[in-house]
Length: 189
Image (cartoon, rainbow, N blue to C red; front, side):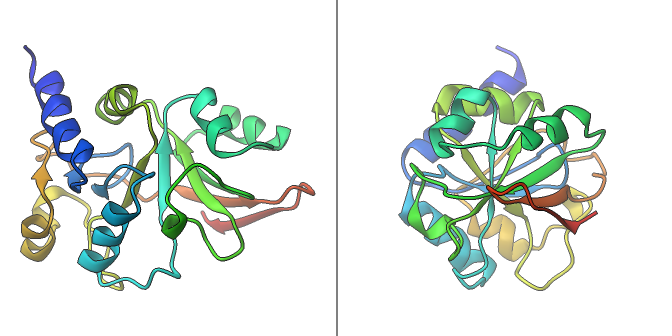
């Protein structure tokens, strides 16, 4: 069995049992868990020393998964995702079917559709969205590579994915907030 499939199996077993993982994404290294498991989400907030009022984003791998979490997705959201040349996170209104402690106070949730093979296949196996937050203590710089991740984070997760550990990552994703009335606001370029 190739290494990516073995890592998917290993990560899935941890996530299925409420654990949190450290894994490579389409942008920077992330800390993740099952986005529907409030206890696992709480573990990430605790590890990052982050207030639960600062929401995290969720990765998804299909339109079907998007519509399971958002009943109404503005047409402009699909246009932005189709036209984006770099990873783009969209903050959409009225999230549902995910852990309540991952949804912002205004009922919005940041989401990114990913095609990166590990993340995509892991979610295919989970059949659920995957939490994704940068692998750092809140307020510290975002690590650009695995070697930049603090021991506190590495030792605080239940599993470290053994893929792309030598790769230097690019930047965090662009973040765009979309409201139901089609207001568009760029949060991070």
